[in-house]
Amino acid sequence: MRGLSARPTERAASVTAMAGLAAVGVLVAGCSTGGTGSRDEGAARSGEVASTAPQAPSSSNAPGEYSKQAPPKVDPIALLKSDPKIGERLKSDLKPCTADVYPVDTSYGNLTNSGAPDIVVNVMSCGDMVGIGMYVYREENDKYTNVFMAEDAAVYGTIDRGDLIVTKQVYAKGDPVAYPSGEDVITYRWTGNRFSQHDWVHNDFSKAAGDGGLDGTEPAPAPSS
Image (cartoon, rainbow, N blue to C red; front, side):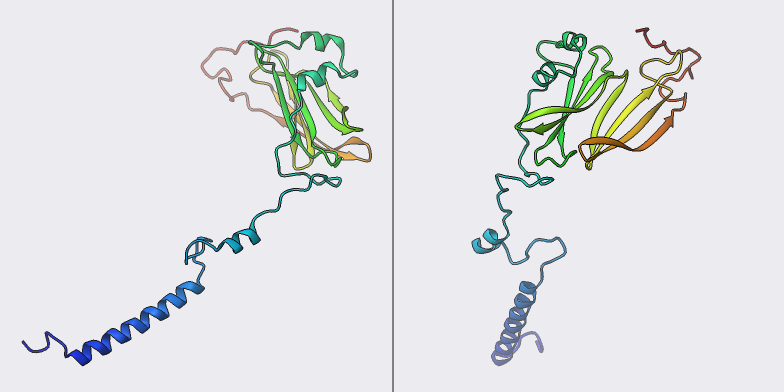
């Protein structure tokens, strides 16, 4: 039937044209990086990997510069118990809640630009895990020194982009432990050789939070100290 088969010369010309188009397509694809950020032409050569690999951090850091490696772990319990600024009553009450698990949170980060990670230690009560004290330690002369502390009820300290954030829950008379009436959020910054207050925010909480007495019953009051 007419038109169902091409002549040999026409097929050869068609094959040659298709090969040329395929070659152009390969060249265009090789110049494109795609929309995903990965290279379309396959894995990079070993020389390219070596040139783009991150360099190992220096063993010594200038003030304010920190290694990307995990900070050296410090025993927070030993740090607290050897701190002369902490009273003996808190030290004697600092005991494991279960087995050898202490009610202590520890954070590492840059607060004082000392060249070594600063440490924030929060001590809580075992029963309700409410903060009873927070402490900041700075490395000075190859040892950690207490440079800030707050021993208040329901206090907790965190590190936020170089700032020390201290949160204190505010309880009105009859407030249950789980539902304070509000909170103070205080921001401190390292200035010279000490922390100074930079910002203060107070939040009042809705009584509808949690149970809030919406079921017709009053929540249990906070236990007396």
